[in-house]
Amino acid sequence: MRLVITADTHVPKRAHDLPAPLWEAIDAADVVIHAGDWVAEPLLDAIEARARRLVGVYGNNDGPGLRARLPEVARVELDGLRLAVVHETGARTGREQRCAARFPDRDLLVFGHSHIPWDTVAPGGLRLLNPGSPTDRRRQPYATFLTAEVAGGRLDRVRLHRLPPRRP
Image (cartoon, rainbow, N blue to C red; front, side, top):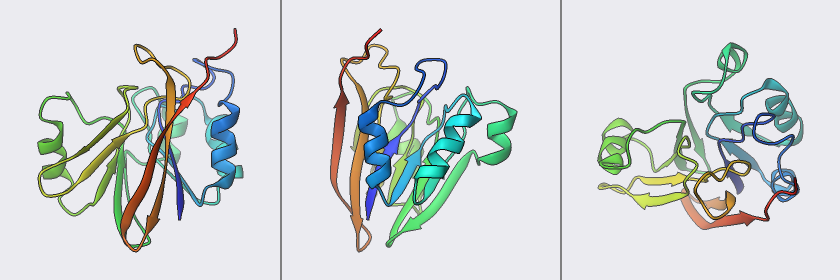
């Protein structure tokens, strides 16, 4: 099962659209995971139209329309992998311990908010992934998203994709 993991897309505030490499990955994926801060409903509509399956949550920049359509926390099982998605996890200090306590029955937690790629494992084995942002790199050297594969309850081939700089 092929995953695309993204967050903090901020369309149309930070970009008019998603970068082409991310759209190509969405088209090829079995599941698209979006950890919030869509900003506007047309992007949700566009991803829903192209994705085979979407698991998404709302973020702090998402208004009433998106909040009505998306949960704050999503919990799903993908081929035996127990996944949770949330936008915010709080300060980086102590993140693994807080998240392990909050999601004790999950194998993987995908989160966003910081725009900073993150890949760690908490005590007890919970893996935490943040894909960064494909449209607003902030202080990061690249805009990014993640791909991964799931088989038999295991997450494999996690890859951070660096996107080329946007043209003005």
